[in-house]
Image 1 (cartoon, protein in one colour):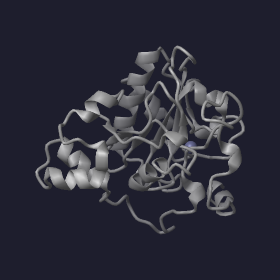
Image 2 (cartoon, protein in one colour):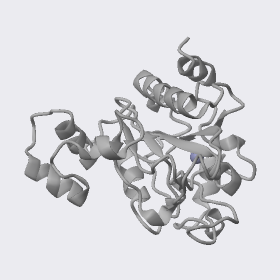
Image 3 (spheres, protein in one colour):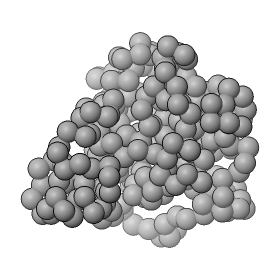
Length: 252
Ligand SMILES: [Zn+2]
């Protein structure tokens, strides 16, 4: 089992999980799922809890919520949020996503698809909460991140890396260079996290990515992290409903 394997790991990302250099053309590249940190919910955790993290507040403000003022939003998100309501639209590749940039130390800048073709979508499960996943991706020592993170409760999507850049998520440099990585909030052994809202939101995102880059909407091109050669990760695991997901991606 994945969790038992990772319980034996140290609290930092294995050094083998990233390119040797920022511009790295060589080597493997990071596994995105943050579970090697060792943090996880209790084994008895019930259904997904609402996410009280700054992302919620930011999204509330961006989407016209009324609870908090701009000052609170600015304080929570620092210089990422200008309060002008245009920052997200200007920086994300998927219009309904919120820009939550990963540390530049956790991915490789690129000019895809001109430098590398994009022909895969890799599906992950975070093994962390949504908020903790975003925080880890913003940690320059984490050495991994994905392009997108989808929230369990409502299917909200944060984009952490631009699609033209190479996120370190698959644990395999070749696969990283030609894929988009999508993380899903939850745990592989807790199917309650895989909500209808999350399936629908993620499938719409994957469909848009496939349309944009001409990627066939099938299981040869929309794969689980566990299918990446060389990985020891098992996500998204047996509770992920692939039949349902591929149907949703295809709009059927
Ligand atoms: Zn993964």
